[in-house]
Image 1 (spheres, one colour):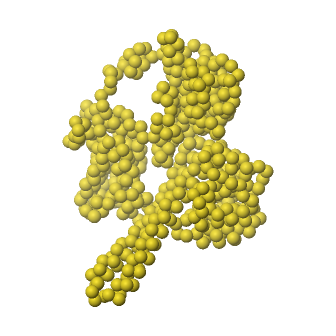
Image 2 (cartoon, rainbow, N blue to C red; image 1 turned 45 degrees about the horizontal axis):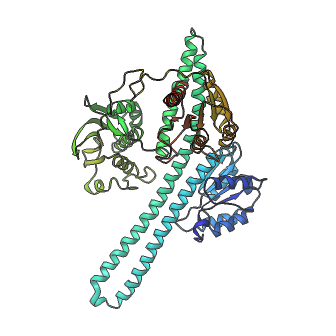
Image 3 (cartoon, helix red, strand yellow; image 1 turned 180 degrees about the vertical axis):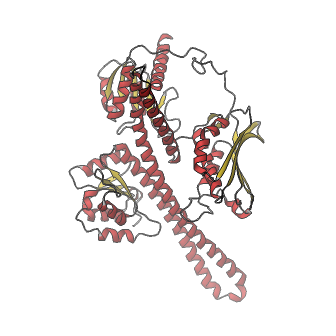
Length: 573
């Protein structure tokens, strides 16, 4: 594909032969900030790829009864840096595992993500953005390869001239050849990194999309179970056990979803005070299942340790990464020791805690140890590792203000130490149970019945949340979009509280909250979000956020706090 200009190289081509599908899909992508052009037929798609494009969104029916040989030949002729991404919109049950035609398209297109209809507009935008990010990385690799090619050509020309002056320039010729070999090896490494990057990007894209949708499903499950549990007969212990079991399963699913979102890098790195001993104890069972029965796992935590300044989700993932690496270093079995304690290191008056993972495996030599935290470096066989585990752990530790220390002896094992800064002391004493944290006042009681404007584009979640709010005594008016909510506010309908989802097409919940403040400055707002798709600092500090999935008591606490704070402002003049 020719490079084209910068605008064409990142546009999305949309091929959907039915009705206005192509126009609507292109409009959705443009509203999300991406360039998008509908095309007609496979000939138009080929012409668009030749002119310049970042991805293609294609409805499955567009490839039915069509000769795909020209498209297959064009894709097969891509240069080494290119792997053009497709998003294939399939019908219900149209995935490759159940649809031979879809599986055939997978073989023809190569780099394809399947999106089963009907789908949420946010899901299409999310998958398209991920595909465009992967395409940009391909462009970066193309530039690197071009630089390497030019360097190779220059060195080859020097090499030809050196042959004419062999007698006087033997040493220079030897050095030039060495540089050439180094650059050729560098090119091979860049190509290998590109393949690994595409693999990791595809996994992250799939994981993030599935986890986000699953998070919304859990929202409805937890909300409805909360209401059902309140209505169970008090004397029916069996029904209570069944509902409690379902609640526990949904909460485990929510915890798993958070880890998946963290892996897909759809969560902010949020540093807070974390009890490392409690964190290790909480993940111990998962670690034991991950390392298997042939590995003995020992955990030791020093008593009386202060909390560390860390992101609990990321530290859990780092600990799991280190445990799995240790397991792989002991194929015949062995022992893993996890120790939590104070570190001797101090910097600028700050103290550190040490989270160490030691194994009795085969260890590393000095050369391997020196490269252990390099991205994509791995001693594992092809297909058994990405080489990103230790580099991710190292990056998280450094971002939190700590470090990752590795020591190893061949035949004796490896020790990985995560150093984390001690959390600064709280500004005030911990309030007793039943008081609002950091205020010294009693926590707000249940809010009086209020009129709530609920905004969510997902009918299932909107219905579940409305039921929970009405069960708390509030009256609810639901709107399916930010535009509908603004129409109600502009129409003068009285409301005491706005509760809105963040991820909505057209206008996000944050944009709605800011617009509502301009219309009604005293209207309190609660922003519900399933993952951190906002930039840090984008939302005002006084705008409360409610993390999905939430239960009724969590929703009640957020609503009560928002209404109480608004009442305090009004009472204070």
